Image (cartoon, rainbow, N blue to C red; front, top):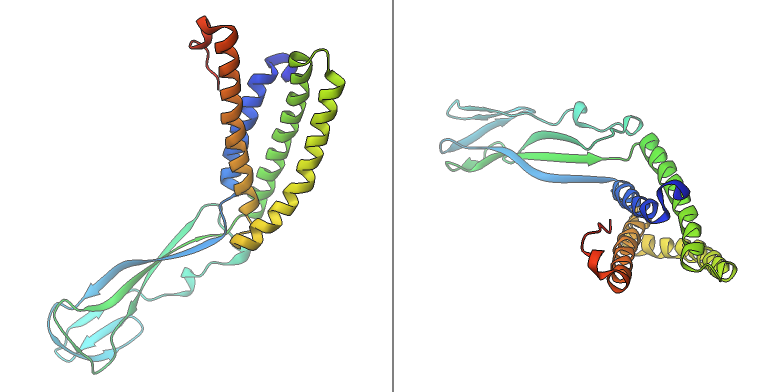
Amino acid sequence: MSDKFGARRVMFGVFKWSIAISALLMIPKMEIFSPGRGINATQKGTVAEVTADEIRMESGKVYVFSPKTVSHEIQPEKAPILPKKSSWQEATVQPGEEVEKKQLLVKGVTRINFEANMWVFAVLTLVIGIVWGIGKASVYKFIPDYFPNEVGVVGGMVGVIGGLGGFFCPILFGYLLEGTGLWTSSWMLMLFLSIICLVWMSSVIKKMLQSKAPEIADKIDYH
């Protein structure tokens, strides 16, 4: 691909794909609770009875609400691909309690649940690995273009730096997990590094063009 389309274009594509896939992989398993639609008293009175789905007042007024049911539970073996929202209502008063007009009788609860789907995660991990492999080949394509007389030295340095990345990154992943408590913190790091690399490469190429061909530098897309 680098021989056919050029290493620079391929590298820009690699960084963009890395950013996009890392952003998807970094989303952690989460369960968010938020206030939902509640029910307020329409008149002053005393609570006579509270059942699973009704609040009866001594005046005869009945407030019907939607309680939490089994259908609101998330089954781990059926993890949805997209976040799932469920809503229910819970009584906030007890029998015999005096309530005022407009007092909250039933509170609403909205839950947004996301649990990474194993197959989606596996496919995205495989794709980003392929993308990084293409990027590795693109890096070696750069060497003879920019350092034609020092291919061996620069190639060796690239290999050493790549090896150091393989050594230090797992250590950083461990510290990130310990510090944040998020298993996807490693993908947050990769997203951050991909953005830095994309911006850095764009800046370097822009400076090179402005120094060697200022008359066309502003007409070239660096991304």
